[in-house]
Image 1 (spheres, rainbow, N blue to C red):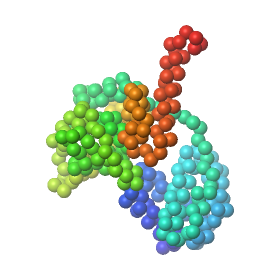
Image 2: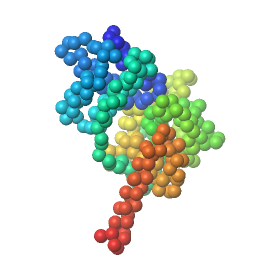
Image 3: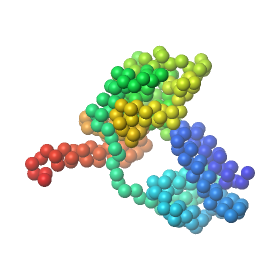
Image 4: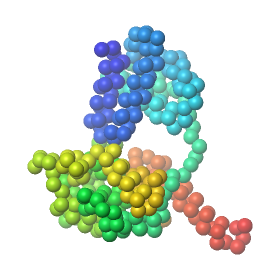
Length: 300
């Protein structure tokens, strides 16, 4: 197997070990396969990793722009290539990560769409009232309560094990990106829903440690959890645009609106950088200005 192709396989395996989401791994696998296809176009042999210089990487980037791809797609592909060459650097196969020298396309500054407190609570209350007949209502309610009550990523939710929950103290051990662990408090309603589901869950085998299970009694996948969320959002709220990160955004924004400290929110979300968390400050200010424009007599 050519060196670069082997490196791609090893890099993707390392992402899985580091608890990257299945969604990210699938996208990176496709992006890296396209990159290898570009390098091997016309039947050419793949060059050694050390011979992939900055000029070749710039030509590849220019080819992406020529396809009129969205900037967010180019950013993701660039992140995949940077990650690959960072892996090669750690393995000693290259002496510098030349992909880091490429310019990342800037995205327009947009604020995430966040459901209001009323919208979020109405949806979860409707799920609790079982307004939609489902085979595992306890699981579905616990899924929503945890996503909103703890601000979890979908990969963190699906990666939960029964042993990660301390029901007496109301704390949850969360394994985030790069296997970074954090403790988050579980609100009373989420804890109650979670305990009800754990009592009702029927794993396929005694060794199954996952909290959230699919219909086969094995660990629920990220894709399966997304499907459950979309089903309820469409059926009960008529919102096909609601996704797991919407509830994570809502968690952070609603905490901030209630006066929570930004540093505390950073810890709860598991953000490595405070700048990632600061977008919620912008969102709150945006909402505040809308209220001002609507209510103040001098605003118009």
